[in-house]
Image (cartoon, rainbow, N blue to C red):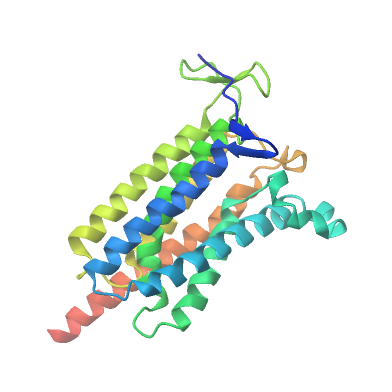
Length: 265
């Protein structure tokens, strides 16, 4: 078993503290920007638009993730103390909220870009989002948070900053899964981007990511006390409609392509 007692802080300069989570969160945007810049160049899109897209993504991710945590996991507290919602430095971000925030942000962005439809943008953005999931879950590992349930498996982690109980390293499970999904999406894009129907990669992303998210919750400790005793936790409940949406998108656009081929015949 692996004993984990890594400090979440890298270093401090006076009142300023640099943490692994913040560094990895920022890195996800930097790497994502570089990937999107290559995509824009590859498809002869205006790179100036990319700066706008990044800001839409940043605000959509942060606002969505924060509101998701506050409203999905502890609404009674945050609605009674609304100023606490703004105190993001205290921690508390939800990936499902980030997903909703990104969807809204991309919709608003695409409304201003005649040559970039909502589905066109989503097909490309989800590639970077999958990779960002890897960075963020690694940050959760450094924070010793979102831990797994107790286990006796040989690769169990003992999070000494939490307790001395061997647990599933659920952060690593998710980080590796999102990395694999990133590789799948990026390879499909590079090989078939001019042939795929708009929406295909978006639908595949939703299906793969949130199916895995639903399954991995079975080995994760419940994040909130009120989830204990429920057959499904909040993460699973929120994943179900996103999986359904992903399957529907895949079906819809494959069906349209088949129908067009039949009409040509």
